[in-house]
Image (cartoon, rainbow, N blue to C red; front, side, top):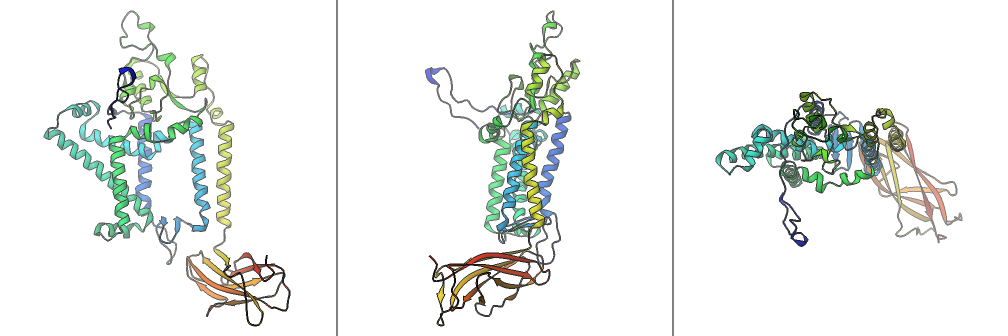
Length: 480
């Protein structure tokens, strides 16, 4: 993306420079293999998960992971989350945030370098680019070449593959929100809802542009996480480090008479050539460094060829850097990981997880909600009876229809229970459905009542004998 050019004050130069394209060179090594593995796992999870089936019975969807917006449900294998249980989703988001803080405190920008969607898709797009255009030097030559038939053909092939990946990305996303086989058939035949096509279109465009053209600019200019990480990192966090005390002064000529004065770095720029964001790690920590460690693989390969020890560029903490510079051994790995900050993050993360698991296993499969009708607060019948109305909702959160009984108790009054129309205190609720009804509580006029009478509604499952209650109040003429 070319930047606008403007004159700096005093005419010293341009305030904004055009973007230089980044064509990273292919490399081999441990971290490159690790990135391949993580890419395979993350993309596999993303594309395959909507197609996994999970038998919940005849009355529920059989998709393992489903965000059912139409029925306001979230299914995750054997777990079903209802709208009133959104606190589980909030808890998961909090755990994800704390987990990210914990990983950053220990491993630095491991999220950015390995599992961030932008990183994964950019890496995939760059492999496609190498397959079509060749490695780094061939890509530069093609970039600078005029628009001939050869260049147009290569660009067309590459962009078509990028577009196919982008469409698959957007298509996989919508399958999380509806039955995947049914939606796929409707999508192909043109019978899907407009929102499905709009969503695929938007995600296709953003994946194509962000992964194919903007690439490192998303990480450097658009993403807020690199700026937030300044508060997450400390002297014990792992970062990719160039050990300048060992590499400097750098130089290419190893057979000159002053070669013994040179450091281990031969200034080959291999670390820069393989960087997906175009960073020169030898200049120190920069916001563009996502700690993908490909520069470590490239440097280790060069060090092996020139007969120097590996690790000139390596994962290292600031504290270990000071120790190594002074000739001392680094801190033990467990001591780097176990420190007050990481302990606090781990305890909070574990506590939230335990509370959620306990709450999940202890939750009732019946939900009862009672809402007093306040317009009017009460009515007086012809015989002087005071009547309150309540809207009741009973949810059957089970996979089969069940029969329930409604009752009411009050420690301070003898209240009569009446239902509207032909409703009965014994009723059926379909599987995974809610039943709404209006009920009335009547107080005999001869018995004086306080301003507010505590009332407890009970609902009992006549099959499982599980009971739930809801506390509310009965209000009469003395209500203030």
